[in-house]
Amino acid sequence: MHCGFHITHGGAILPDCIFCKIIAGEIPSQRVYEDEHVFAFRDIAPQAPVHILVVPKEHIASAAELKPENSHIAAKCLEITAQLAKSEGLGGGFRVITNSGPDGGQTVFHLHFHLLGGRPLGAGLINNG
Ligand code: 5GP
Ligand code: ZN
Image (cartoon, rainbow, N blue to C red):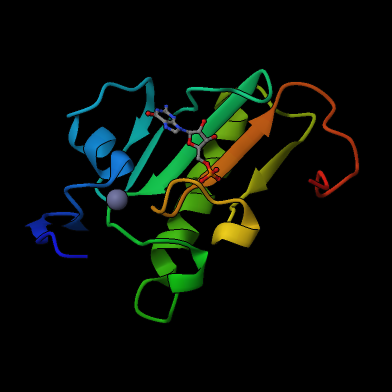
């Protein structure tokens, strides 16, 4: 990237990243949770009655970038995902997905975990195509 980094209390953000802008409040979102390290908001194109994106405030491009220095942030995201599943009434179950890279179907290159639920999601892991 040619653009510069801004250092905030949460870590580095990328000025051209749509999720960094959502976290910074520069693009509106339906926020459902926020703490020092994690931000969660409703997906703009929900694929289930509950579809929340749980993202680290620090700009990490994808799950492929996780390493010993930052894996605790992903763990924190999953902890918050479990908390949100409870508060969203998903006691019957839910699915957590992270797409990584073009072949993984990732379209926004800021790590995020999709929390999906509110209806039976079936047993399949992928849609071919
Ligand atoms: P990916 O395809 O990278 O796994 O997921 C990106 C997700 O971000 C998609 O489900 C898409 O609907 C969602 N998304 C993209 N732009 C926006 C936005 O501006 N606001 C919100 N709330 N969700 C977005
Ligand atoms: Zn970002």
